[in-house]
Length: 233
Image (cartoon, rainbow, N blue to C red; front, side, top):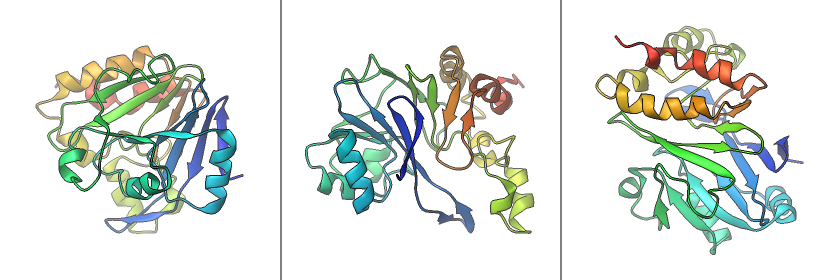
């Protein structure tokens, strides 16, 4: 099985490791099976025969989610394979990828198709990028993309490790990368609105796209990871 079960009706798929500015970045996709049997796919990875077969056993691929402006590389491939699926874009992505036909831009309100099962909010406050954040209610799982990166130091070589540490993306203390953090200089108030909602969800688990996921102590990790945002100064 390529899909790994996180909890009932939610799975992750480990994608390939990509080169991101000279650093090896592991990638991850999330699959949620809604009550009607439709599949909700967060940050789609490259398709392969085995993956398609496993998805077919779970249900029909209905929703494709691009959660920020960096996670869109395989959307066109999925649209070709699943032409009836609806495709949702994070703020700013439709301008970046005018070649992709998106159904709708994501907002601070959950879409009616999944509003009873998945909550969402847009993490605002940065002129660089906004990310759509999701919470799977039944499994108490928070689904993030790049807002937290949490890599094991073992994946980096001798010169990469100190840079990753300075960037703030090493496990067990992973957080928002420093370049993105700095971009919230004048937008922390907006970002805190989203963080307050994420905290109120009281997640047990946190799925992230890059690095180690959090299982069992999600709320504690979330509070620690976003300490930089809670500081008023």
